[in-house]
Image 1: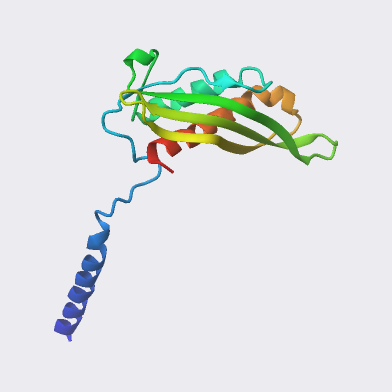
Image 2: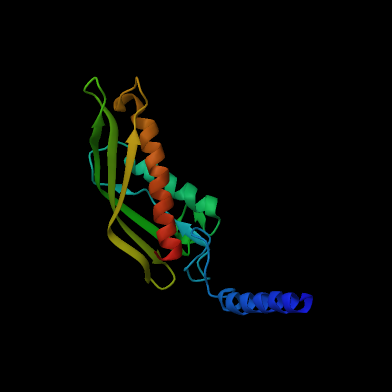
Length: 178
């Protein structure tokens, strides 16, 4: 009886090992840890995004958030001069909208939908090859205003948070080719 149980356990372990073995090197990786960039690209230049909207300073917030995200991930080193860079990331903010979604009992909006649309081009400077391009990169975020506040008083905080999430989404798309 013990021998039979031992053989059964060994066969289960063997089957599990054979089943899992092909998956060990299948190329799977966690989101945010991979990179589809050529190995030659180490430094990136990110000039100030062009702001084609009427929203004041959204270009500064988005550009800085993208640079911060690149720095945090450590895959590319942001540089302050295109001559020192292997690649360039160009951005044009084509649309910025804030729309109320929900209202409190006092007939004031307490939840907003913030939508940013940008034209993005990521180019390898050594051969001028476009590595990533999106004519209409859209990021949408819901922002809930804390009770007793209004959006105008929370706008700077909301834009900073949305810029960080926009940057994270964009950098993941560029680095991992999603």
